[in-house]
Image 1: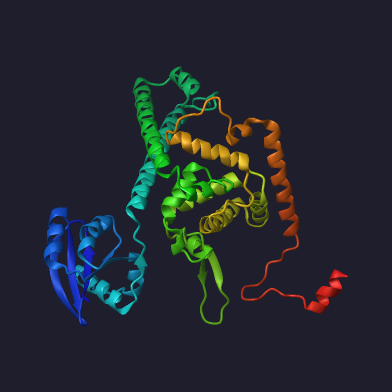
Image 2: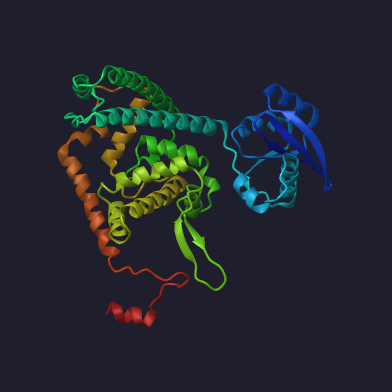
Length: 414
């Protein structure tokens, strides 16, 4: 078996071959699809293993050479840097190091998603860019109003119909008014683009059972569910919920040396930052809905504050998502009527025909008596959770919880 190490840059890739313990230089290849495909056909063998780091153009290189070799491996650049940091660093050395690490079994690999997951991730990333651009434009309009000491808009939405009518009557200089109108036109265009992407995302995932299960979790709407699913991909690659929590960067950093006890710091913030932000957004929504998650949020907030409570709830949501996806079961404390509304909204967003005159489970959510009954059930579950954890005491790190002996347990039962 021969190992081929590729160190990618913007325009070229440095090549190193490792065979029978000897590293040889392979020169450079231009990172153009036609040139790379021609090089793969001429130089690569069916038994080769190609190793490269994860960069912006990695997947294009993987797709160009995958059919020519036995295996393509993508390495985690941050972990490779920690393992093989050197004072002398060149592209030739990096390509050789990749090949040597893989041959020795020390290469930290990255999961390569399938084509459907890659497409979904690109659409989710594009949606995030559009949302950020909309926020920027809205902040610029608010900044203009603040600059000229204008009052707060009486309408609930400044960028709605009533808000825009109010905005058109405000005394602004001509150049500022033209700037505001330009931003509003750009905002309308971005809203159209956002609606188009939402339709594509909904159509791609509307019939998948995994997404339907994610929608049963409190605080998780369609956008959050799609973002989580696109980031996770194949849930079987996470052996435990702690692995998924670490993948989202919601695990605490740990510092320990010598005989000193371990000291836990802030969350690591490594991994899928977009999915982590969506989980935090879902945590704020879950904190406003009745159920054990709200009780958990309030318990942490009383000790550590709101921000820490939101992050802790986001971590709890990641654990719940792992169990929901692994076991293919709905969330235990779900609201059936609210879940039906979310699922129906996903279907309509995907372009499925409306069913006028036909009442399904989602229609029952409009009945106040049924909504109150569903909410009361979750409030009872919330009180039961609060009562159950009222006497919990934190255990020191490394100390196992005490367990009563059978004799003491029998005495306590009497």
